[in-house]
Length: 231
Image (spheres, rainbow, N blue to C red):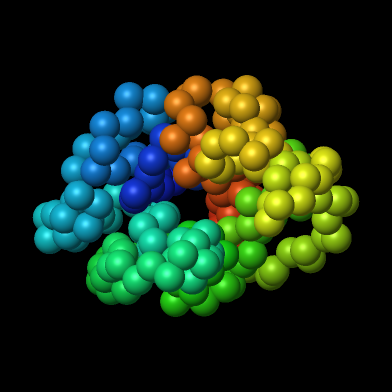
C-alpha cells in the first residue's frame, strides 16, 4: 500500500504554496500565526517556529516527507528595501530566515525555503516566475532547497510590462500587479485569475500568496528526485 507523502507548510498564509503541493499529489498541513479560515487544508494556528520545535521534540515531524517554509523577512524584501531607501527610513524588521533554516536542518528532512526577490540570505537554487507557467503575474520567487536538488528551469523572456503606474509612468502589459492598492494595481478577481487562486477573496491574502503552479512544479520535482534516490 502506497502512503501519500505529507508536506508541512510553515508561515502558510492562505495556502498558495499548499495548493500547489496538493496538486502535485501531497497531503498538506499548514501553520500560521494568524487566523486563516480560508486555508484549504488541515491547519494549526500558532507560531510556526514554536510549532516546528514541538514537532521535532515529540518526533511527530517524522510523519512528513518535506517541509516548506515562507518565513517573513521584511528586512530583505525588495519592496521594503526600496521603500526604506527612497524614504530615508531605517526601522527594524522581522527576519526569521536564519532561525527557520536552523530548525529545518534539525528536522533531518528535505526542505524548501521561499523568499521574494531582495536581500534575504538564501541560496537561489530555484527562481520561478509566472511566465514559466503562462500566468498573468510575474511574481518572481526564490527557493533554497535543503537536502535535495533539481535542475533549474530556463527563465523565459517576459512578454511585456506589468500593467499600472510605476515611478510616475503608466504602462499596459500582459501581467497584473498583485500587490498594494491604487496605481492600476489588480482587482481581487484579476489577482485570483492571474495566480490561479479561487478559495480566498481576501486582498491581503492574495497579495502575499505565491501561485500554486510554483509549488506544483517543486512538488513534482521533489517526487522525481526522491524516486531517483531509491531507484
